Image 1 (cartoon, helix red, strand yellow):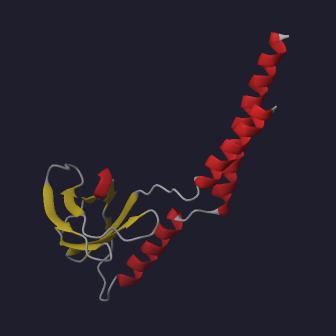
Image 2 (image 1 turned 90 degrees about the horizontal axis):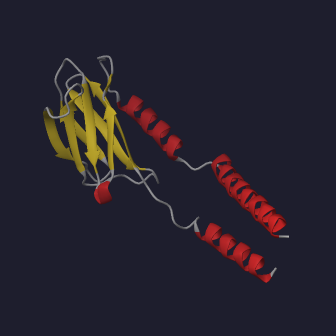
Length: 161
């Protein structure tokens, strides 16, 4: 009985320490308006991906590089773009992080599309946010795995008798 309590305590300790360790990925959004492609690269924790490599490539052929740059201090980038569209942005961050996105074509307008880019940034941040349902779902998976393990152990001890 003492071994089971120690195992449960060790499992609980590992589970609680998992909240302090969070891996992060890399996300990118890009839009084409008038004669330029602008966008934003963010890590999944919401911090801007600063000073990382960005390439603008043809959507149909990633080996055809149309432009190269680095993100600024806020994770933003801007390229002069071709008029016919069909482009993709590839960002490569530290520790092997890589993300790509097709460039969205926006209709030409007399004003600025800064508002639309801000809305797209907000959507990207909301998609990266950790929700309570995600946390509760993770706990449910752990409880389910522990239940399956307990069932397996009880059947093993039943066969030994």
